[in-house]
Length: 257
Image 1 (cartoon, rainbow, N blue to C red):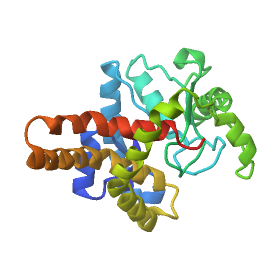
Image 2: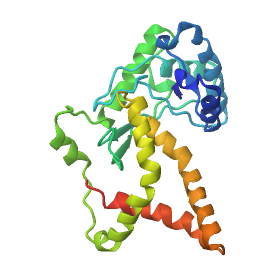
Image 3: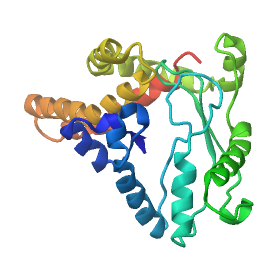
């Protein structure tokens, strides 16, 4: 699920939905849009009936900080509406932790908690009191999964997320990593500049950056492959789809931790 105002543009809405991303609307995005959540919840329940998975960010806000925020009611209401229809829905709490919210090649730690269902919550009716008990249960599961740091505790954050680099990699990947840095600069730097102008002061900067790179990178590779085909012919263009991602991977492996 993603915030509803991301779906205002029809083209972007089509792209997001083609990637199995569904809109969820908050009161801050206009009360007239709240009824659209019924359609989204119905689609979610259909997914659950097929034993599918829906990823929900229960805090309901994107804030670049190292702590768990108060949980919204949407997760509980979706769970209750599913259980009322007899769907055997199970909740899997997950904590996603980033060592940085803006740097390239960040380290990410994902922790999973204990699953639970309606039988693990002492509720008789799906009312406001039940929502509170659900969120208390979910919060208790999430707290151990989410790292809590003060934003000024740079040393603590680095110690927690640091990954020791293999000395074996360095001499082998040094040249490929340098190639990876410069050969991807024509794609990365313009997109980075665009994102800084459009979302530089927003907590969604990284989401916009990653989203654009995700969509445009295949196009970038294809254009380079076509250039190689026009210049050299033969089969050399195929190597672009092998070596370009390898060079990018090499750069990420040798970046500063």
